[in-house]
Image (cartoon, rainbow, N blue to C red; front, top):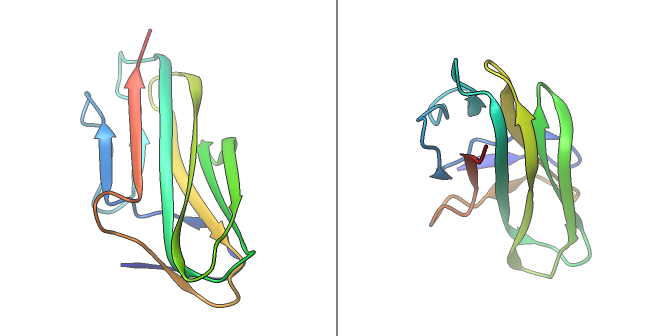
Length: 129
């Protein structure tokens, strides 16, 4: 379980990946996807972020970053006392050694746990051209 602090952009310790044909996602320590040598090209990237037991009318944001810069982001306004989810996706042109990171944010008022069951927090990355 990863605690996400209130009002803080946090690198997500993703508990799953749906597509990663190159096996380039570090799911144990850095939680980044690094494009392997010789694998530059156009990639479809998507991510999902779920936070448990959010209060109503709070904001959750998910960002997909390339080299620390937000490339895509999405937000949602939460429903009360539920696990709330936000997803983002898009297509990126990536070069070898580019690093993809997923970050999350919420403003619940106190730390909340990222939900780590059933791949609720995950990355999917697939080279398409």
